[in-house]
Image (cartoon, rainbow, N blue to C red):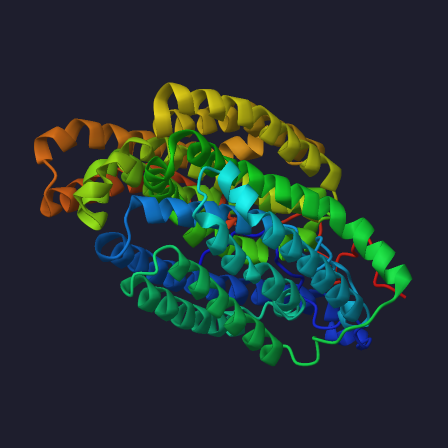
Length: 527
């Protein structure tokens, strides 16, 4: 099962103890930077491979289920349960687990307190959800989802325990190990889901599949990071951890509420069948986010944390990361949005055609999500947690009434349009202001996005002009996609030096300074 969490990347230090002082002739300072860079690059490669493989597997599984086992109503029930689960997962460990990633020093000194807090909070959340499941399902327009909620949200408790060893792997940039764990999660969880779905268990098949996969993740993380599942309690550590984590948990919960409140609105106002179409379209719009953005976020928080004390280096790093993500994402968004109906009917079958009307707008939202999630990681790294909380709160407050009105006026298409209106017209400018206060100007962001956006406009024009002439056959879609991608490639070629960090003269771009000493956290290791 796919779950989108708050930023969960790590720093690159293995323990935090000071390194031995080497003789001056060995020049230790320059040697440390390549070590960090090597860790980041290696982790990014493994993370990208992991994400692509897992998402392709989930994509194939979704096709099988949508074509042969489940209909729109079952997808609607699953959508309600998944929405509740994602919101709970955003705060099930109160944000304290990120201290293992962010704080310098020996994380094993305060990890037992983190584990205790995480387990207690997750257990209380699940108990509250279990009691409130029938009421919650009824309010969301899906009374049949109550039992599915109770089973699927067992993942909240399991995930709360797995957070500690999982964050240790993130801290060490151990994405190779994480790929093996995620692979086992996928095999076990997907097998369980398919088995139960073809036996006629409907949306409950997703629930038990998610639980089985999360159990595998817990066991795998515990084995890959031995000795990290030890309970303990230190009141002083607990207070400091809660001061650190609660703002992050609040912002994360708001962020996921923003992304998932539309599911609640559609379910409550339009019913399970419309919700099933909407969930399918939203999942398709999330392909670029999950494949590209999720891979980047597993290392972006660590990288931004290391650059946090050098504003110029942070600005350069953020603009390059944004430029790379947007360059990779725009063509996927344009192709899926421009060819929505033939793509959905080709992949999922004709009965899912109504989902296509919402997809172009949701693809625009997906592109905004990628930029906002990267900005989220950057703002967390530089300590602007309060600003993040305010941004996400503003987003949610503005979004809910607009979604409700749009759902009644224009169904799932109206909901999709409302999402883009609020995100593009209100939230993006606010994020730009917050980034500007962190030293990342609008000019850098515009430069990162200019060529990809131009290429996207050219792709859209090619599709609009040629699609009526080419038709909707598989060969026509392939030819049209190839031509559109060729046009995009020509447009983004001028940005290749910028993405590689090379100046016009062919010299590598440098920040104001490079430090061999890890950037100190805003809060030191617990004593």
